Image (cartoon, rainbow, N blue to C red; front, side, top):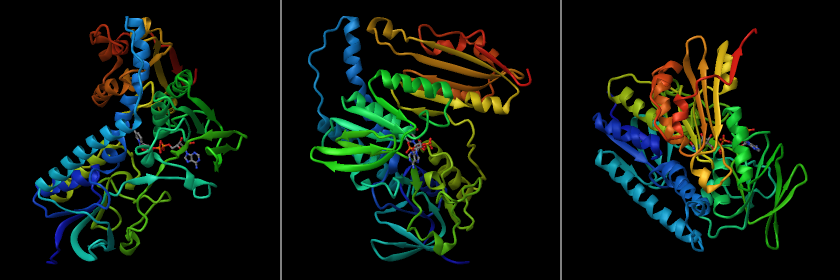
Amino acid sequence: MTQFDVDLFIIGAGSGGVRAGRIAAGHGASVMVAEEYRVGGTCVIRGCVPKKLFVYASRFAEEFEDSVGFGWTPGEATFDWSRLVAAKDTEIDRLNGIYIRNLERSGAKLVQTRAEIVDPHTVRLVGEDRLVTARYILVATGAAPFIEPDLPGRELAISSNEAFHLPRLPEKIVIVGGGFIAVEFAGIFNGLGVETTLIHRGDAVLRGFDADLRRTLREEMEKKGIRVLTGDVLTSIEKTADGLLARTRNGEALPAGEVMIATGRIPNTRGLGLENAGVQLDGASAIVVDEFSQSNVPSIYAVGDVTNRVNLTPVAIREGHAFADTVFGGKRISVDHLGIPKAVFSQPEIGSVGLAEEEALAEFPAVDVYQTSFRPMKHTLSGRNEKTLMKLLVDADSDRVIGCHILGPDAGEIVQIVAITLKMRATKADFDSTMALHPTAAEELVTMREPSIRHRRNG
Ligand code: NDP
């Protein structure tokens, strides 16, 4: 039998790669993991975690305002961006350390270098110019921000990577894109007092989400002072005496301290040597894999954003875990990519699971929509004019709940639990028979008696 240096070589120590390495090592495999940047990956180092910390920071301005209605007289609040960045960096360093320790404790060997594939069983450690042979190779290299290559002045723009380390907070920012990152950072910068303009090519932000959420989020963002330009695209960025100028197709000329581009991410497959092994990529440069994350080359697997399936951290972790169990644990496990709950840390927050109304109508002949929109209790005293939206979609034939969409405080927390009920195929009758928990916002989910719309195909 051929002897290899290791059983498993993993390229990329992000969420998916680290989980795969730890589980494979636990199954007795010898594992080596290469990372060229920082262990922890996008989510921990420059994604979900620091983003959420920034979201918390940006919410305080409204909290101070709201406190007045409750009898408080807050003093003059000042904000120090560099202190926030430093505090965030300390936390990220702590998490980075935990990731490294957990990986090493599992028995996997970490090598801090870029790695490239030489053939289906060989990897070159670029930093050490050394070859390592492996029975299996797992590619878990994630994705990187995509910026239109032909955009004039693209070198003047930042992506979310740089947004976490800006030397100073700009007075004005232009954010391009209408996806997760664009709306989340629009809320962050606006909350921190930056005059924020969002430019999106479509007519509503967050394509793929329920239309009512998309419309209501835009209204709420505008109420908070974010300027949302839809049906428009950035055509150039120019340097001016006091900053930057962003020009758009519809003739806007927007002065800004920073222009942030959040127009999607592309899988990190370039320069990895995948062609040396004959690994197949799709039109979006993602590695094509089967349900067990195996590529067309039997010894090469891939998990997480580099496969462009559902680009979320918990999904990458599940895929990495399932890969290790399948290849080294003797159990063939695939990941169910349906019914995945999603949260957008916009302001207000979004939580969503199951089908959007349009998708439900395409799939089911009879759909009942239960929908409510109300002012959260807190705002009866704060006076803030902000709405919470809750929506349940029910397959009227089976009474099964097939979608739940929330815009409002803690929407992500609520929808995580609702997602369990959808997995269990809960019916509307199950929701109705559950006692309300009062006074909460989530109690609306079990007290909506009459549908606001009854869709019936053919009449
Ligand atoms: P998204 O795919 O969410 O959104 C990309 C946005 O950019 C869309 O609005 C898209 O418009 C627009 N766009 C794409 N190409 C162009 C172009 N050439 N010119 C103008 N606009 C363009 O990507 P993000 O970068 O926001 O986030 C990447 C991924 O990271 C997300 O899809 C998600 O999987 C993950 N993520 C998850 C988070 C969470 O769970 N809370 C937070 C942040 C990221 P259109 O709709 O018309 O295609």
